[in-house]
Image 1 (cartoon, rainbow, N blue to C red):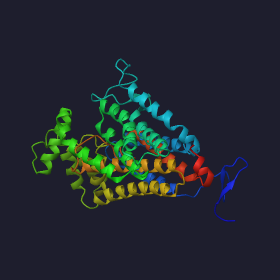
Image 2 (cartoon, one colour; image 1 turned 60 degrees about the horizontal axis):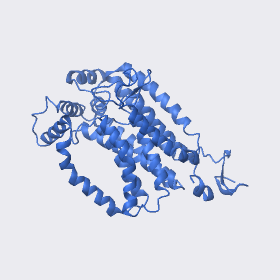
Image 3 (cartoon, rainbow, N blue to C red; image 1 turned 90 degrees about the vertical axis):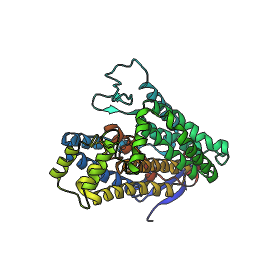
Image 4 (cartoon, one colour; image 1 turned 45 degrees about the horizontal axis):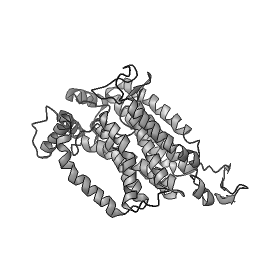
Length: 396
């Protein structure tokens, strides 16, 4: 018999899947490979783009990618039941780590502030950023709670997921890291919508945020207000901030435009990036380097790879037969898409600079390994799609 034989009951009453490769409920041909292909292509683009100006960092990025792939393979091992049981421990562990980096008096060899921010735990080989794990932990905890929340369509139940996301968001804001804190919001909104929350509740929330946004301006830090001012001036054709707080955005847009349609040679692109003194060219502003080196086509290919990754995650959610798996995939897809939009938006000068990196592409071991772990989770859920009784009891 070809294909999958699903719904067969074991002596214990569990649903068992038999694939063409044998027993065990694991499928080797599935839509999860779509996300893996997207992640691999983005990782290659990242190494090549970083190598344009920082060949040494490009080699380190390649090593981080290999470590991430190994970590992704490791998280493919647990089943859905085990993943669900790990949701709350992972959530509270992430909160503990976020608190740890903020504790005064921690030795600098362990938690070393950078540019006034306390975001990293030094592991000697590379710096670990707890907020990267927190993004996955929040998605897991929300998926575990929402799947069994019968009151999600009531306003009180609708508010709970946002209350769950608030503690890590506030801790990340204190570091301070506004960009990463904002990255939790798309996942929460996407997951509550997918779980059947009323659209009018979401509309009320969005309207409330839109009304509070202008009021929050005086409470922003001085450099954050200056970035908003610089963006507003830039959108109005005013270049008064182009040599001050708006320098990074101005240089990024200049380099994006210099690439034209097809980009330019590696030596010419390297010289142009260095001549323009683009800050964080291997990190936050890596998309500007891509457009300078490979032009509009390079930027389009990068976004195409990102869409492939997100499409793979959504296809896994579509085929999922339990709510926990479906919501985890949607949360990962929303977080990834939000990060892509914000990073490229600030590079192109249509969003304020927030320090959000381009997923899989920007330099950083902590971010890259965490993204590959998320990809491994997608693979895990695609490999094991419970049916029947197992679908109902896998995460109970």
